[in-house]
Length: 43
Length: 306
Image (cartoon, rainbow over the protein chains, first blue to last red):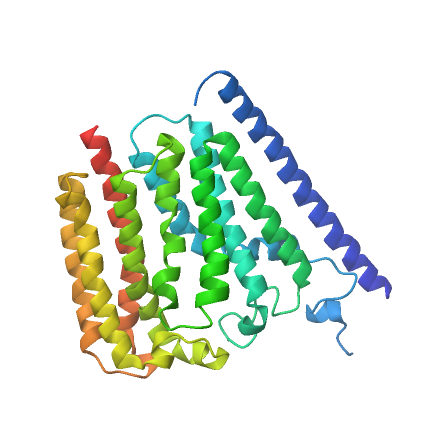
């Protein structure tokens, strides 16, 4: 594996990790909101 | 300098797929109509749903559609590679390994159904599950490679979203969501075959038995006209059954008349050069606008009636 290939792999892994993190954070907010609505009988 | 697998964009044993390719697998552009018809089903339904749960329901419909599209592309990766229109998708272009796509599709399917069940109700979740399974197993695997009538029955998969949206609010399925299901069901053949007429060479290259390939263009034009007539009846059914009011009635009458006019033009023509198929392209584009208009009118009417 060349240094250039290694750099591209790291960059790809980093961008995927970042997107996964953002999605997980969004899901935390969504599940929190759903829970609050369900507890409050808002459905 | 010879290009490495990474430089050429092809898959490398160690290069993970780009996150944008996972998004591309879900066919976000196709999802627009699915989300819109699902949202209209939800908004037209009687009763109240909390905005957070309504958002979640629409999100689940979108994720379910994305999951079905992903599994479709996983199954058809070899066929997609044979068609110019689809050759650059992540799997045929070699930018992603098939197993990642399969895991993503299955995971997204399960997640969307479970989230729908938890947030709204299990009827909506069940219909969502049926729509994903129908698209993958009945349409993609069974019908599409075998019969030229594939999209007639397979089109049912795309007709579920308003039923799911409705069920998410009410917990049941009544006459109006069934009527909206029938409208999309009979709208799909003229919509899709208009497209198949001017991309015929692509389907022929991949050996997919689309109607123009198997039965010829004249038969396709006749079938477009035939299904337009049935679709017109389906479009007027909500009015005749008293489920909607004058806004939908007027929109459906005028919109369907224009649809029929464009479809009749396509029926009468005998042009076989895809570059000269202006009326066919016009019918295809108008068919999308038509569905947006009618579903928008259903919502307006239901709100006025309420």
